[in-house]
Image (cartoon, rainbow, N blue to C red):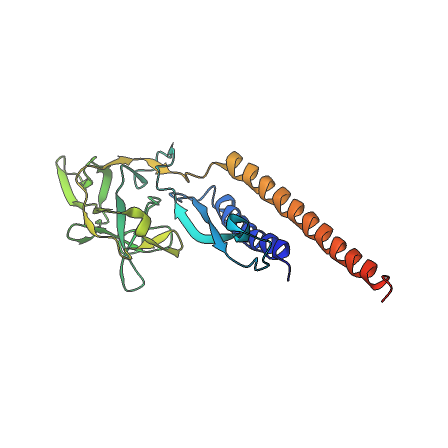
Length: 253
């Protein structure tokens, strides 16, 4: 296959991968706590031009190589909900939850109570405190969550606060190393975790996705146009090659 076709094909393959990443970002533009992904590419040089009349840098053929994706861990906007069980993190920490038989992490603070009074995520995973799951009593009311994560309530007719636990917030030395597991959950992967003492909780708020919808839609249009332009270029190269073969066939022997 001609080098021009190989180079064009390598670019189309990376554009297809980039479109998948953009589409996933757009699909999660309204997912609480979602962190956008972005594609990462690099130039790959390969010496495939082997004719003697190609010298120096002209012998190098430059392809496009998909290196993977990187995550934007920037904080999303805060949206008030007036729900005392909703919580948003100001800072780089993550909520620790019990899911899939182990400890996982999320930025989605849309919480509620299950049938046994335990604080759970939207998918029913237990929200962990420093001493285990946060559990409320049937007579608890006036739930208050302090910026440091301490959960207090008024129990029955009592006028003094009762502590129900402290929301566990975890930070990582390199959040980009966290592994996306779906359902808005992350695994620690190769990142080292530690208890976070700098981040704060904001009760009655939800952190929205940090996806820039307008920017993602603009990139989607750019990718589509690039893919079409390369397809047209490859078609022109194919037509030129076909024409050359037809003309050579007409040359007298």
